[in-house]
Image 1 (cartoon, rainbow, N blue to C red):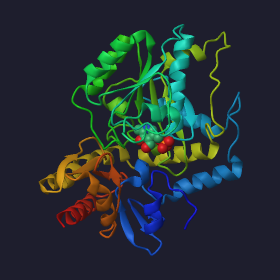
Image 2 (image 1 turned 90 degrees about the horizontal axis):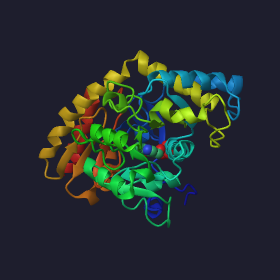
Image 3 (image 1 turned 180 degrees about the vertical axis):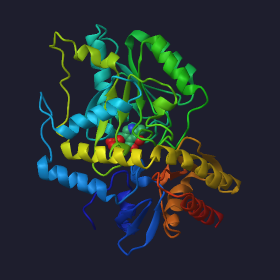
Image 4 (image 1 turned 60 degrees about the horizontal axis):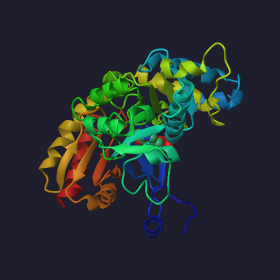
Length: 410
Ligand code: PLP
């Protein structure tokens, strides 16, 4: 029996079946220790936007590590890649003039945004605005704030009271958010957290007009709008760096991670709109955010992120994600004809889920797909996840759809 306790795993099943060890990656594929090749349908955990095995990123990391691997960024300390990356992100942020707060991953980013939302209202003289609101089906990571804001049954239970002053609304109904804010009183609500496309909850694109509706409502009710772009950021949505830009949301904060480094090193960030940063940047000083992480702005992670953004730009990968939006719809869409499939959710960039008629079959289906050269997993309540690297070819998407069809037809 091994010692590694896998996250989100039934360890008795892992002990019985053994670990599925991924030994190597190349482009949109991974290989096991025996050299068997698998189409990486999920891009790791939605993060390998540029694909696996990029020597350029390894070299960026090695060069930075030889220079200085990392240093503190508390107080006035900084390293050059951290500063450069912050400028680069401010330049592509959905709201011009945003400030960039670095973290070690998505859950950190959510925790940071939740704390910053409450602190912002304290500084604005409204300390009673403390409630943070999330949606059903939402996934905002597994720190306490994100767990409390999440809406996937099972993830939130068994931990007692998570974070006081949190609420959950319907994932698809602007009026439910309005009713909740009215019931609690807008004077008590700090922020609404929203994935532009629900990811881990099962890949649910937003209903028509939903995002514009909740954004407008937050403005009207003086509630901060936080776009959780941990999955949708850095091109996953196709055609733009962030879903917020594509959908014109102008969020007060954007949480991100994953595609920031394409997972080559762990790193996250919160892009903070000028309105929210303002109280902490006043010339008279004295107001500062007593919050941050040892690895906030980690120099090597920042160097890798810069190299990652270079690749996305140079290879036009934002447009490749748009190409995949069409290919995924063309290739996976027809699977809905199978008896085993009730719905194929796609149409928002390089993201899709094949929803099975029997939700309990999704994990077994994902496992069987390995024998057909596909690595994927169950997502949401009985979906099969498809969120490839942007370098996956149309032909590979065809192979992927063929494999899913073969498994589900049996
Ligand atoms: N927010 C969203 C939308 C996510 O999908 C995730 C992870 O999948 C997180 C937050 C948490 O990120 P991490 O696992 O890097 O902490």
